[in-house]
Length: 314
Image 1: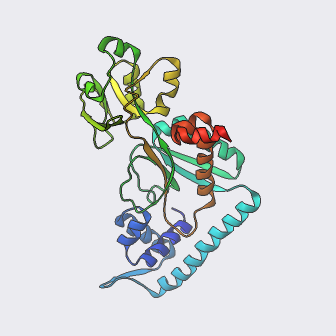
Image 2: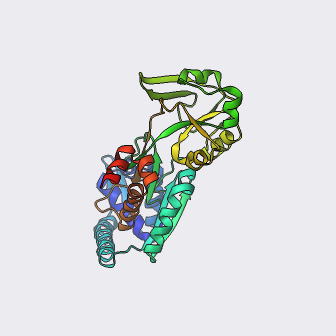
Image 3: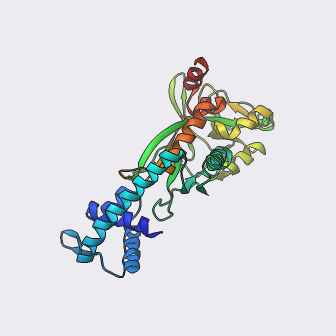
């Protein structure tokens, strides 16, 4: 972590009053904050904070460092924003975390276009399905689907991802096509072990919410692996419509139970709280939202049929 980011974290810890409070605000852990402050103290060769009965206390060196760090961080943020607005472009390195399947399918083209439009901007894409510590991993912004844990991060909703039930034509020809979610109890179902409800599948249908318990002989914590199992005829799976979009067009996969769709998953952009959101983060989120709105297939998939119809009517 560079010196500026360490100073930013130090100022946040001072203002929060404790490492644990700073960790909650930053979406990280208390040991992470403690390690980073220790790195700053080693870099400067001075103790900045002392622990007292009432919490953290600034040393004499810490008082000087806090005043300079706060001013420096504010000046750098404002300088970046001002020059970015003047140039119409952004610079620095944008480090993005995203689930692997969505990153490969939809996010990479957005980032490549953003990099082409902003030659001074570097892109560092980190693909993983697990929640990671944004501070520890130096992540500027993370894209997440579905319910969010209490991360104390800024969560900006940028879309919603419809889900569906999918199976190969070969599987359906051999085992039949379910007409109601309760029919799934007689089918092989491919379970996503990454989500907490695993074998309990939920649907929204004409009679309201429907829940059913499923079983099968294959489970995985990765959407690409589940898709491969569907294409191989192993069973029926719940998944995002965008993942099977091309497969449906090509006839490799059929969508079943369309009157009983699983609930859509909200899409959020997560970033650390602060008075100023870095210009590179704002440009990235705006570019992703613009892609959702301006691409007809994505507008219908992510923002819903209503948004797509409104766009076509304009």
